[in-house]
Image 1 (cartoon, rainbow, N blue to C red):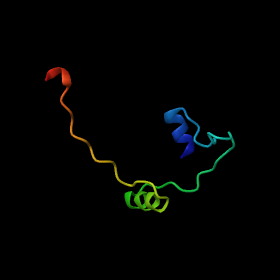
Image 2: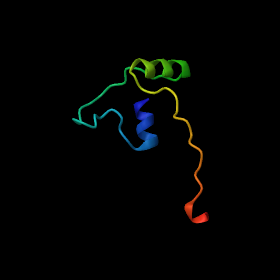
Image 3: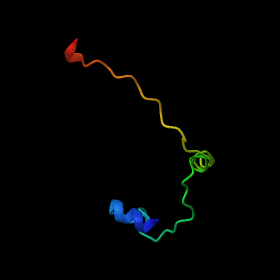
Image 4: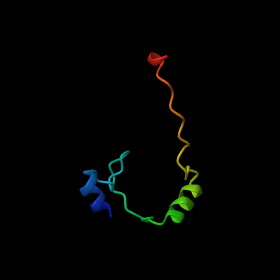
Amino acid sequence: MAKLLARVFQYDVTVCPTCAGRMKTIAALTAPSAIEAFLNAVDLPSRAPPIAPSRLDRQLE
């Protein structure tokens, strides 16, 4: 999986951005329910924020 991400994005996801040490993949989540459960478990938002309505450009007023 890491090789595919590196190939597509030209970014090595196995290198720690803080210390440049090697990281390893411990899980590859693909099921939406598993992704949502993981994000909730680590206290990250599992839903996208609501889309705000567009505002009228002041130059058009």
